[in-house]
Amino acid sequence: MSESPQPTTPTREQVIAGLQAMMDAIVADELDLAGHELESLAARTGRSMDHPDVLYFRVLIAIQRGQSLEALQYLTNEFGEDAHPELRVLCLYSIQDPLWEGLAQALSETGDASTRQAMTLMLERYREVMAGVPH
Amino acid sequence: MSAVKHAFEKIGEGIKHAFEGIGHAVEGLGKTVAGVLTANPKEIKAGLGDIAGGAKEAVSGVGEVAGGVGAAAVGASPLGAAINAMTGGKASNFVQGVGDSAAQAVNNGIDGVGQFADGIAKGNVGEAFSGLANAGQAALMFVPGAGEADLAMSVAMNAGKQLVKQGVEGQVQSGIGLHV
Image (cartoon, rainbow over all chains, first blue to last red; front, side, top):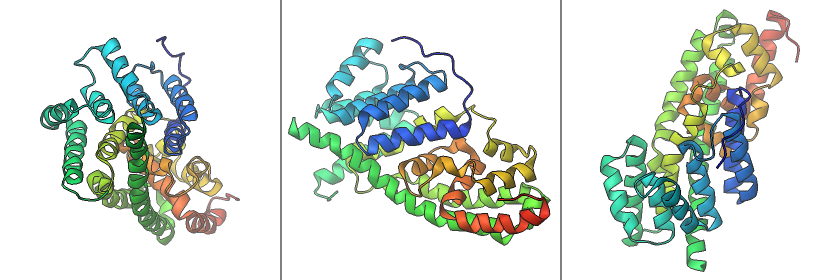
């Protein structure tokens, strides 16, 4: 993927507004718009589309599109099987690949704080669902 | 495909669920922040320190709610729970290092009184965050890097817009000649 154009020093309000627009679009399932907003946000903040911050939301949008397998393949092809394991968990879970659980368990113990929390919550919630706790 | 699609849809549901939960917390905070501003309007003239302190205190309270993403994620799908927890850090990264906005000026105390009052009275900042409890409002809750002033102003402009505006109008029009 090509690098984004030079950013034009956005204000916080602009960045937050961009995040707002993107998340609103994701929630509304307006995924083309979400992708557009993400591209704009990336360009404004000088990030490539493969920057980890951007990649997270790209994967989110891909999952929401029903393209988890494609996202997983992209992660593998572009970054290797060891990169972005937290994103791989999301993709693996989405395609119902049981490998997600072991990877999530490992990350719940060794990832950064945010990842540990996310994986722990995911595992806990999964076990609740499996135990019949409604959601 | 339908089963997989179902899983995808759960992400959106999970996000909505968390946003709704945090939105309620934001609503409560909005009243607090509006109260801070309207109950102590002289602080606007006197300086930003106490206001920022009050806002920070209020934000800290909700921070615990927002920090309790797990609580907000209860009832979400496993995938939704994970996303709820991860989105904050990722969104925060976009804001880190971005400065020089009206809200940042408040944080720094640059041209504090006038700029702060002007921003609130004219709704410059609030226009960017219309709609309480929408996804963006919740997103802001997820963004520690946004700073207390960003959050307080955003919340105040949404939840306590009229209260704050009235309070500022009353104090500022006569105080520093600002008309809205």
